[in-house]
Length: 71
Image 1 (cartoon, rainbow, N blue to C red):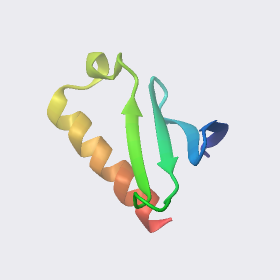
Image 2 (cartoon, helix red, strand yellow):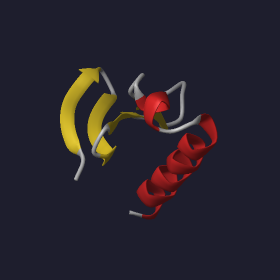
Image 3 (spheres, rainbow, N blue to C red):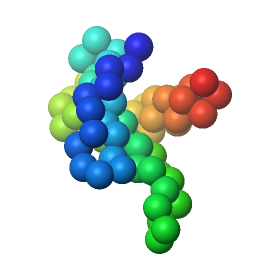
């Protein structure tokens, strides 16, 4: 379960999620408007690189993106 953190700016919604116990990630969803299409951005906590090296973190990110896309 992701937690909805609210609307951080107009047309911008923020969600928090712990992928692993010490691996928090924020997911920001930007709604479409007249100029831009919708977008989703993932923001890992700065301590994530302490628990996983770059390559495993990239694989974990890919798994997260796939899981969200399939939901």
